Length: 88
Image (cartoon, rainbow, N blue to C red; front, top):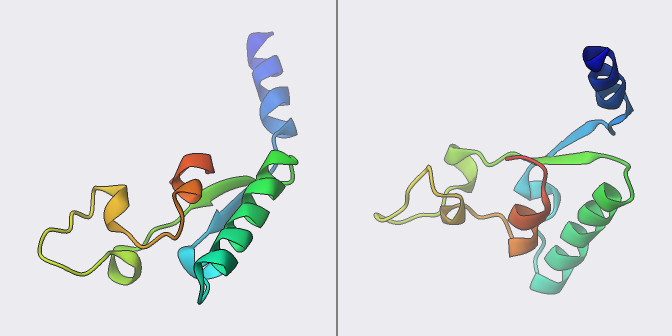
């Protein structure tokens, strides 16, 4: 019975949407913030669940102190994207 209810809940969840930083990073901070907030609003409206995809070869910042396991060492735009996504 519990498994059937869990399956029903899982089927009612919105689909995943995998986003990469190139989908919302723009030339200016204001444009980046607007694009990121548009994605986050779609998540809040229940249209999708967001999964942020950070690629080491493309999004990792340059420098000797970078750590691929630390999310803030990646270029991802505003802090909203790390705070408001469902998974990364």
